[in-house]
Image (cartoon, one colour):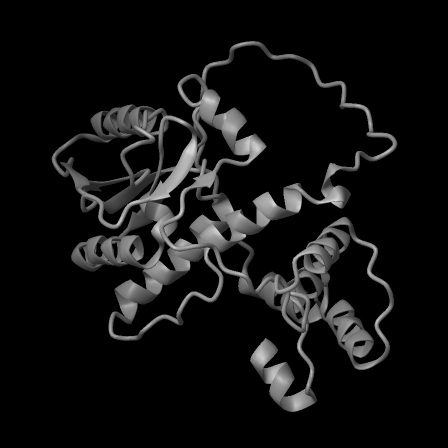
Amino acid sequence: MNETLGRDLGVKLNAESVFRAASVDELVAALRQQLEVQPENSSLLRRALDELESNQPGWLDQRGDIQRKSVANETLPLTPLQRLRWHQHSIAPRLLYVEYNKPHDFPLDAFAEGWQRLLLRHPMLRAAINHPGEISVQDMVEPLQIQHYDWRQLSAEALEAAQQALRQQLSNYQFDLQQPPYIVLAVSESAQGYRIHITLNTLLVDIESFRVLLRELSSYIHHPDVLLPQLAFTPQDYHYTLLALANTVVARTQPRELPAAPELPWQGQAAGRFIIWRATLPASQWLPLKNRW
């Protein structure tokens, strides 16, 4: 989008302005501001970025976006939040577990190959956390092995029990944080088709990044010969920037007053329970809603 704006209007928006726009009207307003005299941006992030650029010129490009790269093969310390979660990993691991139903003609070989290509494309998928609590990217990791379960002959009751047992196992998987990748893939096959099970440790790869991985995986599966664009800003660059921003005066300045924590009832230890919920709108309702917004 930015390339089109630059070609047609001669302006480019920084990433913060794009993400803050909650509608097309707000995006148009941001464009108008860019074409006119820019008002002072008082957001905490922008002030911290400006301070970083002022003290160490070269961090930001002309649009105000980060342009400085992390040093290749350099170990990076965990952020304070990551370090806290790292210490809690053995008792409260940060896991994302998802399931997807696919028909029998789903290309499992392409699915497996796509994940191998993602490992090569994204260094953070090959990152390990060493004993001192530093992130170290490995040049090579063991290929992902997909667990395959053939349950085509099971009765409906036995199939449900087997799926529940696998779901319980994978959703509580214990990763060795010194042995990447932090991903487990499994496929269970029944008379109805395949069910794909994915467990991801989110200590270094968050859920939004997982969505990016799924989009790229889809491209690798359905368009394997189409090259994906080169990564202009990597997770290592992002992490490197977070560490630099944390040392700015703006980031260290505490707000005058924080809101009180919500008074939520304490539930104690509750047994985990999984429910698959699906809902769709018929086209007669969805299309008018889509056209309206």
